Length: 86
Image (cartoon, rainbow, N blue to C red; front, side, top):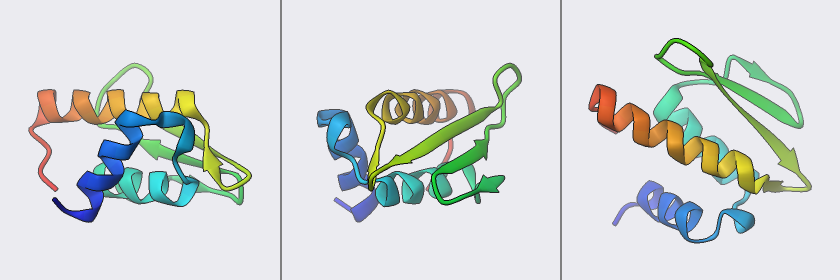
């Protein structure tokens, strides 16, 4: 199992304990470079209509659990709808 798969597995098992830097790596992999980067926020564009972005926030080095869950949902949607390959 590769590094990215390990991070995703950790995200699913314990969304409360995900490092912000690791979540950024996963978002970069699936959504490309962040549209907006600041020290505490990153916004990623998604390929569908509606709410076309993923917004993640640094919380003292950790990702917020609800945002980790949103990223997992967006990845699942991409894989189902677009057959995304890493």
